[in-house]
Length: 78
Image: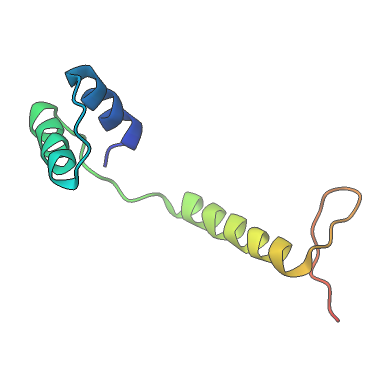
């Protein structure tokens, strides 16, 4: 996997102005052929759990809309 900004800078270095899907796909393919990419590795279980907790916290914030003075969110039962 490659971050989008790396491809963006690559395209900028080629001074390409065309922005169609077909042209973009060709540029991404050229980027992949030109450079050696590291093999994709699955994220560790710790990062996955952290990501899940952050998502859960975000959904709680949306549902409750309630925040304590310390900035800690709690589920409000109605």
